[in-house]
Amino acid sequence: MRVNYFCTNANNYDMQKVIITGGTGYIGSHTVVEFQNAGFEVVTIDNLSNSIIEVLDGIKKITGKRPIFYQTDVSEQKNLETVFQEHSSAVAVIHFAAYKAVGESVKEPLKYYHNNIQGLVNILSNMLKYDIPNLVFSSSCTVYGQPEKLPVTEETPVVKPESPYGNTKKINEEIIVDTINSSDNLNAISLRYFNPIGAHTSAHIGELPLGVPDNLLPYITQTAIGLRQELSVFGDDYNTPDGTAIRDYINVCDLAKAHVFAVKRLLNKTSRYETFNIGTGKGSSVMEIIKAFEISTGQKLNYKIVNRRAGDIEQVWADTSKANKVLGWKAEVSLNETVKSAWEWQKRVQES
Ligand code: WQD
Image (cartoon, rainbow, N blue to C red):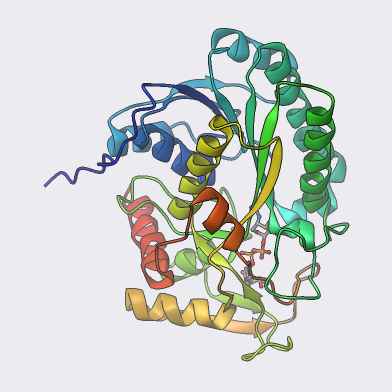
């Protein structure tokens, strides 16, 4: 039986157009789905350095529509400009395309500064040149480092993040503000993500780490399905209730929806620049994630406790009241449903 994933509450954005960079990536692909469900026409750009083009087929299976796609690198201005020339009627750009592996950024900082910074500079230059007035930027809670006070609000001081990856997010937010201050026709929202996890309920799209996963949940699902021997839990000697580190794990579809709320706010021309924490408002430890996975999937997980991972912070979770009140957005999917969706996706990947 074909389940109809079309969104019943599609608002009539009468095919207003958005450009989504990094649209075949994990968060990008889920965001393409939500914009199509909301009635937007989606143009997406990706260089396929960390994703596969078949993701577009998964999107089509969910929404019935394959987004317009350009295989282009945002750090290469010439090819990028072609997209903006052809789609200058877009009302907003949602910018995901960036490298995001914390550990790799420590080993190869220049690769990260070139790609992540030059990419944004090219996006902004084209937006100004072709009069596309609204930007939603994919930022990260990593800009807060290890906060002194929890939960984290948008006023929590931004510090020099632990990694070059995190520093590119901090610098990019500053570039956006400076560019807005220099122009009359640019408005932006930075969404500071906490930890995105899970997959679309259809299991047609999900997280697809190429190589050994850095992040916790794909490592868990790959261990459970037998691709990995066992999960290493990085430290149980933190100053937390069960000794393992705490994060705010947010369902990727909830996170994707936050971008639609952000574009709606920008279209209402209410402000020039705002930042929003996009999390659940609740912290979960590594052991709690393992338990939630075992309970919701019935799969026993092989794991061992090892030393802490360099660069990891102890605990962080969001105060999401600003996003709740100002954007009108709230995380809705439970942790158990979310880890189960990651497992359903892992099994689908295994079958294909
Ligand atoms: C979560 C927790 C690990 C793997 C980073 C970036 C953030 C965002 C998400 C891009 C930590 C523990 C992990 C494992 C483990 N990046 N862990 N064993 O480091 O919180 O955030 O990725 O969007 O900006 O900073 O995420 O999933 O790597 O780790 O014990 O095999 O799980 O120590 O406590 P992190 P993570």
